[in-house]
Length: 507
Ligand SMILES: Nc1ncnc2c1ncn2[C@@H]1O[C@H](COP(=O)(O)OP(=O)(O)OP(=O)(O)O)[C@@H](O)[C@H]1O
Ligand SMILES: [Mg+2]
Image (tube, rainbow, N blue to C red; front, top):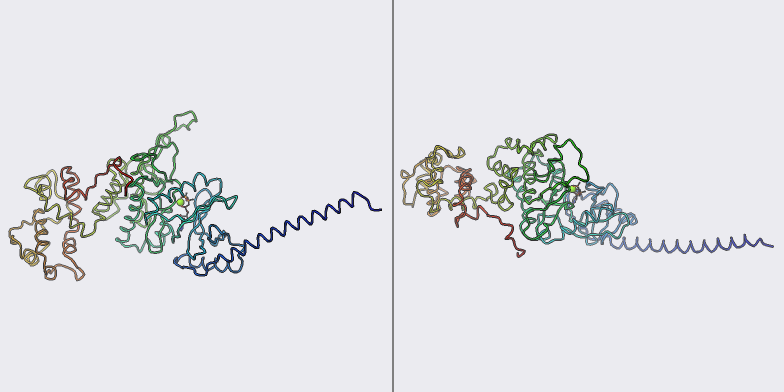
């Protein structure tokens, strides 16, 4: 006779095996379905754009074909979370990989431990999803957010870029042209303009070379909005916080707890919390540091890491002296100023002569020349003509402008006007402005007859600014010190007045 308990156990074992088998079958079916779905999502039409990451995409597609199980699908994008597909990493365990959409479009996926999604990734999603970011080509494009499909990680899918600015400067900084650098600096500021100038306004708060991306055409985009913040209310100009953030060497003066840095004592939890102020101009000061970095193949205006904080505290961006162009030095010394009143808003920085096209520079020069206020012995007249020993004219202008133009070309330029060459005074730049204005009024055929020009000179603007490249800048320097000039109808566009309380949320 069979032992009863043993028989029961065997029976039970059989049942368990059967139910386990059923479970296993179910699981296998689910996996098969998943693999099948992954296989069907493999794009048939890969829209290859990236140069740097092309090989990775090629490998990803091969893997997708040969081993679809190793591909994870996030919102119809395929990604393999293996080192060979990684393109970046950051703090808090952030990893960034390439991913390919079933629509064939190349994207990037940022992966963060789930615990940090609420604090960081959602914040970044909300900012990237706001209209200031969405509408701007200078802010990285947001595609999708997911914090539910995986128990351990959250994902942010973004448009793909080639590399970050640090990598770009390391690889290509040496061959960068002056105009290439100007374009990049302007693009950083255009990114800030998108964030700062329309409600709801946004602070970036973590600008640094690794948080600026370079696309396949060499254009810059602001990225990494983990630390970004919306201003607390419309028209607000400060975001107050007691938490220090940002990366060493890339934080503005007013966002640093100097008291703590200079104190011997550790803070007590009972101490009054520190008060840090984040302003739009905080992003501007760091953009000034980035601009210097772009211009100098990766150097910092405050020097090597060990002295940066001290130089920031002492208002001593000492390496600005290393720049040879006085125009960009002037712009950066304003952007880097410790005093907030001396720092420009982004709209003001973008109107600096450094960024003006030849046509805009000429418009400015003509506007000054046509200004009815430019009468004998007003302050601008006296400085331009070097009549005031207490305010000598800038050495950036040649002493005698007539000599620079030369007799023959002066004859050509005066043709058709009411003044003969002898009626112009070479030491008076108000006369130079007058000649420029008269030339433009009777311009026909003059350019081709000028002798002092290069074969490539294609316009009268180009001709004049080849001879007097710093004229718009010197005029700008003089006029920005004259409150009643800056607001003149023809000049005010070059000296924007910014009042954030008046910003509306209208387009
Ligand atoms: N859309 C993208 N395209 C290409 N590369 C990217 C993209 N997004 C991020 N990367 C790369 O991944 C790196 C890390 O990304 P990100 O700066 O967003 O992470 P983070 O953890 O927030 O960084 P941090 O260390 O500044 O806090 C970037 O420096 C860049 O090299
Ligand atoms: Mg980053």
